[in-house]
Image 1 (cartoon, rainbow, N blue to C red):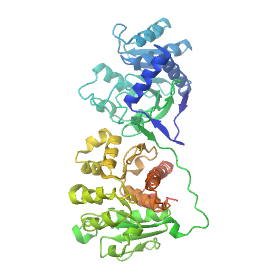
Image 2 (spheres, rainbow, N blue to C red):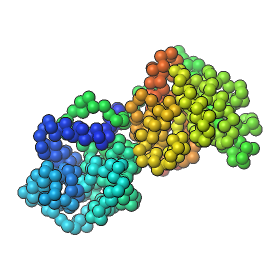
Image 3 (cartoon, helix red, strand yellow):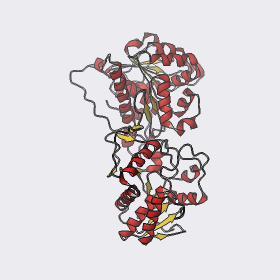
Image 4 (cartoon, rainbow, N blue to C red):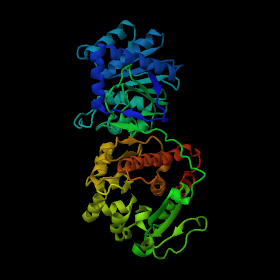
Length: 515
């Protein structure tokens, strides 16, 4: 059944191996060529829906079965009386058997095969990208695209026509959302001027929603080709909108927990004042509904707060009862945060680690040991919010490796340190031990400005602080994972709803939070 992917509920995501399993089961159940016929019919239906006034439809087909899906769709569209032409990189002699049958159907139906791409495609027309689909994997490093393939892809990237990608935008790796080697240049030009759609077949793939995938895919659609996914577990989830939180009338500030922000290195330490980061996190926790918010700056000279935030209470670090509050540590912490991290890691029951706290832990093995030891305390909650560079340092690797498989990197971090992880970026990854990793679909480039990560840390602190106390550690950690998902969703949703011509700053983001 053809459906547009909305974010009102969770969607299961299946990696390439799982999708291949679904495909094999489907072929065994339906017989040869049936799935390709269903795929072609789904492509044709969506093509007419998104470009109902197209004067011409150009289909770019690869040599494999993704190209076969495109050939099948071309035959169906031609049968509807539409002006269709095809550029095919395959040949009848070498094509897979199902693709041969769809090619013959296109030939018999009078579809035009062209050597030259139409040069007069306009905004009303349609281009169908059926070049590669899920034919590329992260292990294809040595596989370089042909010049003929890159030439077609260049046209797809620059056409004014609406673009419909079959299964995946060509060159995108299904599992990671990264562009395969050799495709970076072809896909690095300005985004397609026309509207962009992707029809994912059989299953939704993780790469459509993280990394480069969100820009490449555009609006995502799914057709399961009338096959059930059965008991096959998803490799990850696309997070849906969380339920709204009800605050009972008979609650008080203690109901919603205390949050303490520990961070904000002052000018005295290195001449690089970063107290604003800690204040942003505190402001976010306040506006996110924490019962009380305390700020323990790492600058002894910060004795007063701006007058517009009188609700935030100043504390010396040594006056914090770390065992009884939710601690957010690291925002603007600089080098000074190293002095307090041993206490924070050993005594805090609920802890969010961000920014310079993560940098310090990555650099010092004793701090890593203290972080790992927290997982042996069943009632301790630990969350971290690294960006890719911080994640790379914690994993003793490089940013390119983290970005090459963001889901795997986030899960590895979660398992290594026994904590919840938000790996920030386009399609942030939320991972935790014994949980299916999630991709958050909200947020956009408006968040690419200083301080928005501090806001996320403070928001997460408020979410974790509001959790009901329980001595069932399984339930406690499941609840913490759910609250982390909510925080990430809410943070991105504000950016998505922000007025188009109004700058989103971190302080405005923090003030826009509601519990």
